[in-house]
Length: 108
Image (cartoon, one colour):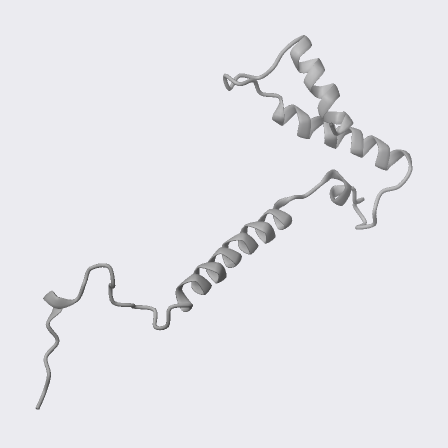
């Protein structure tokens, strides 16, 4: 004799489980969350290229002394110039730019 399941008699508060056992669904969420966070962390770590890593001469050797000092000053100035934008999207000028550049170059 074969029994047939009557779906009308199953209470709505007890929906069918599509992920197997009860404990598997939260674990799946945790694994996916860790994967997403790790992906963004690795991506941003590779994307950051500082002036220190760019300070290399034509021969492939790291710069030192006055050449490195000059390069670092130029590099930080250029990177801060790109960031010197007001809240309205326009480039900063005058005292606002001077203040921003001073703060940006000091690393604060």
